[in-house]
Image (cartoon, rainbow, N blue to C red):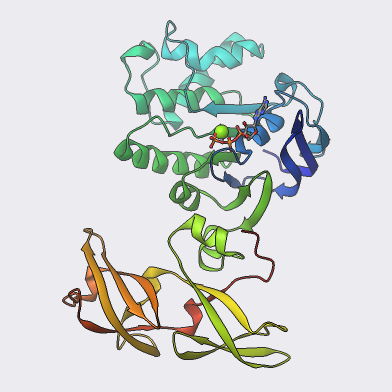
Amino acid sequence: MASIQIEGLHQRFGTFHALKGLDFRIEEGEFFSLLGPSGSGKTTLLRLLAGFEPPSQGRILIGEEEVTHLPPEKRRLGMVFQNYALFPHLSVFENVAYGLRAQKFPKNEIQGRVSESLELVDLPGFDQRDVHTLSGGQQQRVAFARAIAPRPRVLLMDEPLSNLDTRLRNQTRRQLKELQQKIGMTTVYVTHDQSEALSLSDRLAILFEGEIAAIGGPEELYNRPPTERVGQFLGDINVLECAVLRKGNDASFINVLGAEIETAATGEKSTIKVGIRPESIAPAGIHPFEMSGVVDDVQFEGEVWRLIVNTHDQPIRISLAPSFRIDPPKAGQDWKFSFSAGSIVVFSNHESG
Ligand SMILES: Nc1ncnc2c1ncn2[C@@H]1O[C@H](COP(=O)(O)OP(=O)(O)OP(=O)(O)O)[C@@H](O)[C@H]1O
Ligand SMILES: [Mg+2]
């Protein structure tokens, strides 16, 4: 187990600048995700960590050791990728033993390590099965077992669940989380699926166009995204341009849908952008600030009712859990809803897109 330190890391492919100066640290034992849209540089960063290619600039440390120019086999990492890349002609045992043999583990230790790893991924007794007789989820768990068998310092995973269907993905996700908690191995997990990153990670970094847009814990980033774009990437959020009513040194008051809300000081600006998540809005009578609007659209989606309510010339998206036990309003109806000051996110002044 080890920490990872990334310092001033750049990657260029010809004139294309794929990673633009990354600086951050992943703590020992942490489950850390890299989340970003397609092409943002997630796999590029993982490949640098793995040692498949050298960076154009910068340093990578694993624990106390600088590994920037070490080949992959000297870094003591485990890897799991999207296409599990098991050897189809070998048994489960031989697949899991593969890394152990490559690293010249003593023969008498291999049997124990393979059994132990298969037990960890909840596939005890699968040793002699042919890989091609396993389900997709089972194959992916064999790939995990193979990666952890040599007890690497760090586990690197690139979209390991994306080949599985939704149900299996959710189930394997839970198993993966349990597994990581059991063995406590430092894990770097690449995904473009925000719910996967939120549910699995201790912390995550959000990557846009080769730059880190935000870094933090799942709840912190979801509830307090620093920018509009980060907020939107993590889930639906209403973005409102609000007039600043009064400015002070320590606090300002802004107009949010007619309600006067206190915020941190807003500087010289006359308007600021804020966000409010659809699920933090409730029917009237629940939160302190109430307003009314005209219902534009109502959709039932099982877990939630999704409403669009027009108020102050803006469509506001609201999701209501059926547990509110109200009859949802109908389109065209006047309807009252409420929110609290605490659910208003004030975006930073340095909005980038
Ligand atoms: N060897 C290469 N040569 C040239 N360009 C490359 C190379 N590898 C990656 N790129 C470019 O760098 C950018 C980042 O690619 P990367 O594979 O890291 O994205 P990603 O975030 O993993 O995306 P996805 O979610 O689609 O897997 C892309 O624009 C890609 O085309
Ligand atoms: Mg990728």
